[in-house]
Structures are given as C-alpha cells and as structure tokens.
Length: 157
Image 1: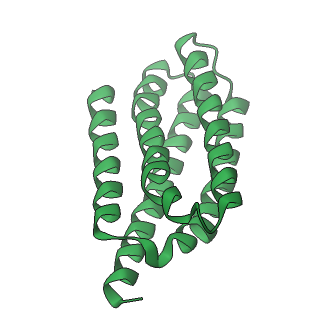
Image 2: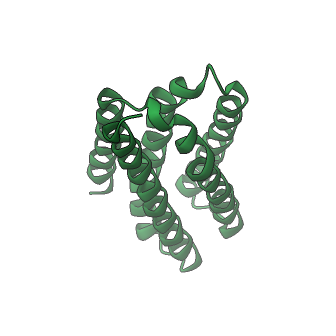
C-alpha cells in the first residue's frame, strides 16, 4: 500500500466520519425543535437532515461497499440492512413531521440507530475499504456529499 492510498482512505474515512458528526448535530437540533414544539425549526432542520443522510448512505453504497463486497460480503449485507432500516425510519419520521405528529421518542430511536451504525462504520467499514480507495472513489464520495449538502441547503431555504 502506498502513502497516497493511505492518505486517500484517511481522507475519505475522515470526511465520512465528520459527516456522521454533522448529522448527529442535525439530529440533536431536530430533537430540540420537537421538544420546543417549534414547527418552523423542525421543518427547516428536517429539510437539511434528510437529503444529507440519504446522500451519505448513497455515497457509501455506491463507492465503498463495492470495494469490500468480494472479501467481506457479510459486512456489506449488514450495512445495507442497516441503511434500509434507517431509510424506513426516515420515511416514518418525515411523514410524522409533515402531519405535525412527530414524537421525541421517534427522533431518539433514529438517533440511537445512527449512533450505533456510525460507530460500526467508523470502526469496520472504513477500515475494510482501506487500501482499496482510489482517486476516483475519493472524488465520488466527496462529490456525492457536496451534492447532498447543496440539495439540503436549497431545501432548507
């Protein structure tokens, strides 16, 4: 493994881990808005959170999972299953927010699911992808995260 490969993986893993942290902050803001019954803040935070979280999972599925699929099919299966669970919770939460029926317990459940999932990805998936990360993969991940952020910012404004 070359130094450049290690730096690319470190860069991709760092960017995705930072995105995990930013998503956690958005979830905390969502929770605070729900507790305060602040519909405007709830809608604005949701408009940023949902596309960013979907974009994050899309980047992993498109660029990282194919790198580890051949050697670690169980890891890929687990990640895809967790992503499906997260998408289901997102759909349920989005509907509840639209109907003004969101419950703090539902936000907490998504937060807990994402904390466990993020920890696992940081410790396992990003390490397994390791030296397989190419310049194209790094560019694809960064581009997908940026597109999701731009989409979120447009939605939130």
